[in-house]
Structures are given as structure tokens and as C-alpha cells.
Length: 141
Image (cartoon, rainbow, N blue to C red; front, side):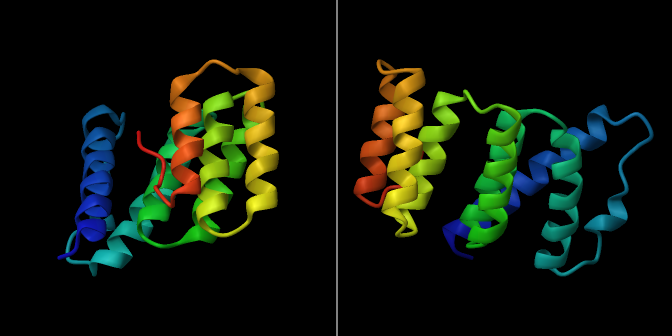
């Protein structure tokens, strides 16, 4: 199993455990029991998006899983939704910009970088994410 698959499975498994541990009515384990791995992951990510609610970092977490799984369109949608709810999230703007840059959309990336720096100029983590994007390194948590 490759690193990407292991990472996705770990994140999905962790989300499932958290939901089960903190859910009020119990967690529907039929979402993943005896299912194909991709089918289980997709079902759990639907739940994770609902659980994310209005939380911007929670939505970014879901987007990261999609990114790692190679589903850019779904990742982008999760990131964009996060930023729509919190447009002044300088770190989120830097992170999304890095993903856009890695995917080849430099103009959109630099637009997001400019927005990030207009909010916060002295944040080392933002600058590191942006620099990484130019080197093809995905943002680190």
C-alpha cells in the first residue's frame, strides 16, 4: 500500500473514531464495514464534510484528504468553501494558493498569496507554505 493510501486511511479512520466517540446517537459503522476501501472513504468523507460544519480548519482537513487521494476538484471545493466562510484566513489563503501553484495555476496562486500577505505579512508558516508551493512541496500541517 502506498503512502498516500495509508495517509487517507489513517485520516478517515481517525475521523470515524472521533465521530463514534463523540457522536450523540452513535456512528453508522455500516458506512465502512465490508465496503471497498474507496467506497468506505467516500462515505466517511461525506460525513466528515457534514461534521466540519462552519469550521474553516475542519473543512481544510477534509480538503487535505481529497488532495492526498488525488481528487483536486473535491479538494478545491472544500478549500474554497472554507475560505468563503472565513475570507480573512491568511494561513488558509496561503495553503490554498500553494495547492493551486502545484496544480499549475500560478495566476490564481499568486492572487491568493497577495490576499494572504495583505492580511498578515510576518507569519513564517504562510511564507514557508508559499515557498514550498514554488518547489512543488505540498503544504504541511
